[in-house]
Image (cartoon, rainbow, N blue to C red; front, side, top):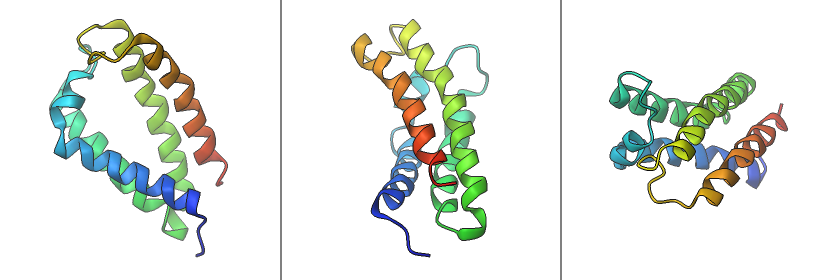
Amino acid sequence: MNYSWHFLLMSVMYILAGVMHFIKPKAYLRIMPRYLPFHRLLVILSGIAEILLGIGILIAPLKDPAIYGIIIMLVIFLTVHFYMLSEKKASAGIPAWILILRIPLQFGLMYWAYSYL
């Protein structure tokens, strides 16, 4: 298959984001909502999911299911973004206006993925 540079960018972005879960797990543990159990396991599983979905979109028979997986993952990750807005420690010192802008960014990422279906 011949992929556009922006499609490849999306793939690389999710793969690298997933790898970061293993390089900097403390950063992800800090932003995990308290009401979720097994924080370390969730960080590992979300990292694996990002890596596999980033690879999956490059494999023709897996492309569409992987894109749907990315959209579902981004919807789930919205809980983290809202949690970061509500908890000072989880905000990691990021200004509130940036945290607020990240929410519509999630929807932009969902649309970006959806546009390849």
